[in-house]
Image (tube, rainbow, N blue to C red):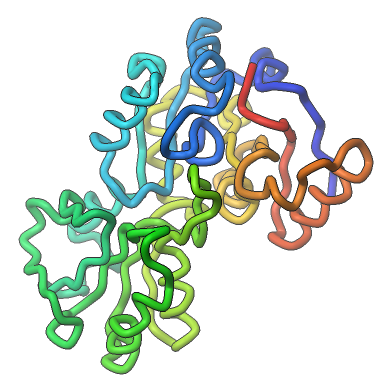
Length: 289
């Protein structure tokens, strides 16, 4: 496997690519504040004439994420489009696309802060008891307030009843101002271990990248790079989609790579690549110019 090239910042890549697909948490911000230099880096990409799409495993819809980015200081005009796994899940459900067309109407929704936008206008009936559900939909979790143990009772009922679980955020953990916190993918993994059926929408699965390619229409694949902090989802997803990946070392895997430099850092990144069977073309310490 070819070793990735190390770069001090995203500006090194600006002459090599025409379009950038950017992850959100762990790359641009931690949910509470932008990372140093991130707002400037996005703006300089646009000033350089680059196409920029945001691709996030956020279980919430695009409008919520657009508003959050603006609140954090990012300029909405700097993004050509925003694709979230929550928006993608809403679209496949609204269109009745297989394999999502046989889930049923009664939904037990697991979400953050009671957000129901992910099912608005879909004609589903929300139920409070998993015994009454046709399927479970995990779009968010109330972490760090709640952990996996708090969700196991509902997941155990679903497994016993043979209910499918739709997961619109495959991430197991997400960077936040409180450190790494639980994400819906961990619930889906628990369901799968119990032989439950899981339907994923989001990175690293190919369909969500096709939505980005629609936004970046006309840009050749070899001139597109995906920037993210997860080997399991961002780097692997870019590989699946046939585009280059730039790994941000200071995000999800920061604890594993903290303090490592030179050859030690290269070896640690190589181990991540082997573990996840994914390859990055580039490595940057943080998303900055």
